Amino acid sequence: MKTWTTKSGYKITKLLSFRGNAYLIATGTHNILVDTGSKSSYNNLLRSFTQLYCAKIDILIITHAHYDHCDNSSKIKNQEGCKVIMSKYESEFAQKGYGPLPKATLFVTRPVAYLGKQLERKVAPFTPFPVDILVDEYLTLNDIGLNIEIIHTPGHSQGSISVIVDREIAIVGDAMFGVFPGSIFPPFANDVPLMRKSWKKLLDTGCVLFLPGHGRKIKRELLEAKLNKER
Ligand SMILES: [Zn+2]
Image 1: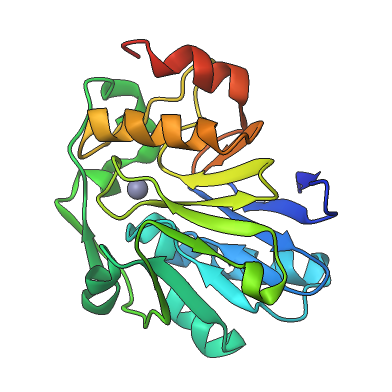
Image 2 (image 1 turned 60 degrees about the vertical axis):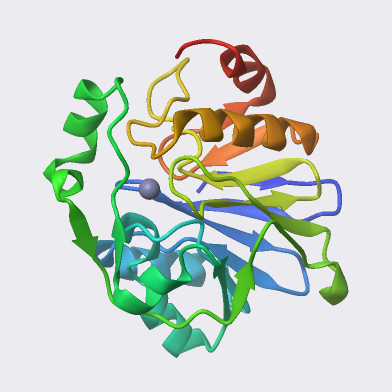
């Protein structure tokens, strides 16, 4: 499993990765899971926890209410008793068990083939789950001694959030897409201009690496280059 270590010694490990990524942030005091993958990934997720000697998940952060990111939230919450953090703009979907899929962007043909026909559904259901802490624009985990922030990065969906670890590495959900080399444009986005504003917001955090919900890490230089380009 790919791991990055930030300046405070927080270890970020990329889990799953077949249909969508999840990330585990191990700070030494807390284990924070970002996204859960889809239902079929559940056993893989548990296996990863065992391999990483992760005894307990303390906090679960869901970047947005799409099934391929949150489908195991209910199970993880029940099993671990963790606090679930999500955007206040999408928590109603967590209760309903579906998130409306965003509009396809123009860059649609190849990614759709990659993501599979599941994403062509208008609504993709998942098991509903309770949310404990709602994020509006900004939330810091400073009060539990962590240099971790959660910022609102809408565009792919209205309530997409990103996790800023040590102002060094950002876990960005589907605000960017790392599947095709040299490209970061997600195949689906509700509001492209808003998504670009979120890219700027992410650059302003000073982070040097951006970890997407699908595909590989994205370097700051690539994001900077793409910010003002069409695609
Ligand atoms: Zn999504």
